[in-house]
Length: 166
Image 1: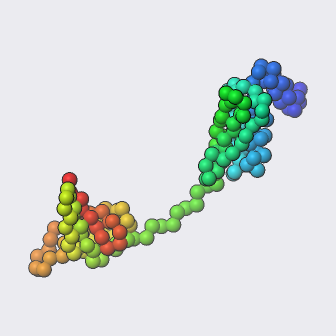
Image 2: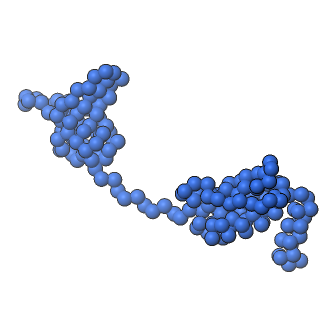
Image 3: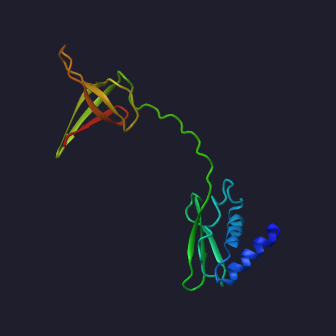
């Protein structure tokens, strides 16, 4: 038996069994996305063949689930109709650009210490470099020749490192 006859026989058996034609849904999804199954922009895989969906008499409505076009919503318009989500193969992510440092080693920073109901700020020096959100070591700048002990703080924005207290 040729492949075409096998597929036609499977579709006919599915229709006779009272279930929706899943291959027809795959074709409609491919037409909607403009790409075949497995290709970038097309369905990640075919509709799961274990599904036993009621035949849809009023036709299918296809739409993008989100503006990111990461899946297609296939919905049967019949009363008590069904709805399935078909994931779409996305392009491989492009490597992100390196994150620029908000603070470099040796930079003058404001060290902000905050707790429940208070906030104190003092000048300091960054002992490490980092981006916003990174934890780095900082040292308060004192007017005396003695050096203060380093502390760890989180970079809030360029030039500002915070040390939250419980």
